[in-house]
Length: 454
Image (cartoon, rainbow, N blue to C red; front, side, top):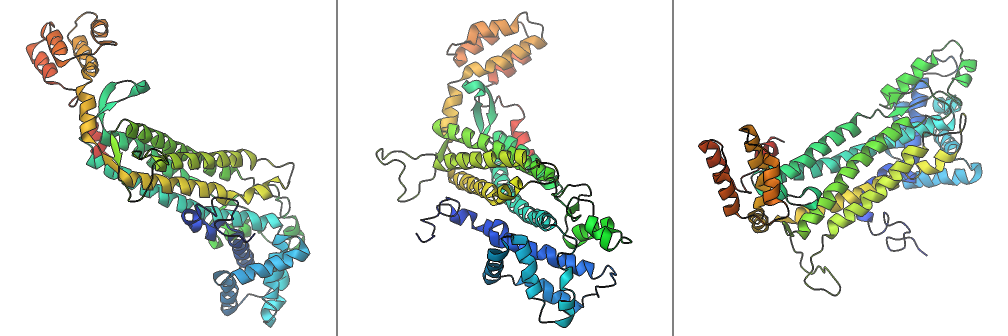
């Protein structure tokens, strides 16, 4: 069967292909091959400047040509490498042979061709390639998250003064404002993005078991660790890991994936909360012409965007959790279990993007229903019990909590009931006046200020 969006096994390349297309240039097999070419070329150019007697400096013109193999890397080039791999049965060796084939036309380059992949193990190329890919992937993730933060921040400011009944344990609780609840999420997300951005993406170029064995036997007088660090940091713009086995041990990947998992969990929390508020009619959803909510119940406008987001972020988190637990484990100096697993980096990022896209779409449809919010508050005067008993405590009235508990717990309380109770209290008149002016809609503390300050 011909591969298309309708025949793809994964919904990331099928149903959700439009949402994940931005990742194809980062995590695809094509992108991995291009990253490998990048690393091999930069290593070769750096070697040519390292004063090795048998390797002449590569001219500026030839450096430009070599780097053009990366900038002009095409599907045809990738297919050519795959054709070589059909013989070698080794993808990194195929990249090496392809680069050498591109150097044959020039005498100076041809003479340098045996320094392609010099001293390298496959993992020197792979770990740096994955690091380059994850650097780009992180930028995409953070850009999507920043867009969500900005939308929520707008909600926080626009709805800072709109009172809302809180629902601790699913029960009526002290009021807040809609904007403050949005600000709470903004604060969590901003911290989460900072944690993602602070992860140092590491790479190594130190040979078969991390000791520069081949490098040192060929050129024992050269400072290979310093050279390797320079290539990693100044050519590839990554962070150098000096102590590794054959593979870079992937601890930074676990740190990165755990940070993304944490922020995805915050968004799942938001998805569920907004789903609940929609069910309470606090929010309405903007209707889309022609859209169907139910195949049998015409009246329904389902919160499908938030449900879709929750499901896909859950999938992403399950993958990121597996990756973070598996990748740092390698038997002795090397096993291949990480190799096949690492090919799924884009899958975890893909489900994250689908979740973010769905959430953004859902947030764009939200319309605040202030009438429903007000009605809920007007029917919840019992939430002022906290305010009254706290003022009673200030003025030394005995058993304030117990008195309010007896008056309000499990009972419908009217404004008149509370005003009558306050009138009988032995507290200053000024305090009574403040309490008797209080309503559920005005008992929001400094929620408004907190929302506006975010």
